[in-house]
Length: 87
View 1 (cartoon, rainbow, N blue to C red):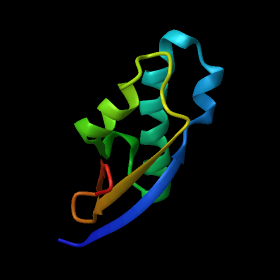
View 2 (cartoon, one colour):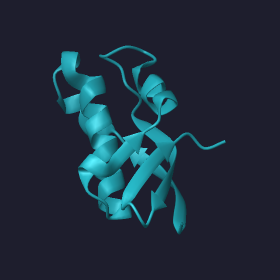
View 3 (cartoon, helix red, strand yellow):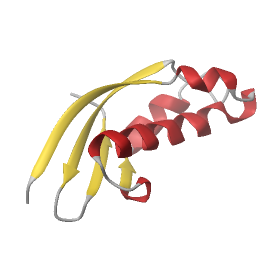
């Protein structure tokens, strides 16, 4: 199985222009879009780890972080990408 690993700093500044009650949800969507664009996989095939989700939701729905560093792994055979926290 061919894998490709990359570490990305994902800017989430656009989240501040969304209604306060939708910010964390929109941040998750931005992470999916960023990874699908850079790893060249469909948006539906991006899998976000639970720890990344908890990091975005850590301060609640109104105050997600303005940027996040993640490790993305692309699996060539299934054409999927997995988003994890770098360790």
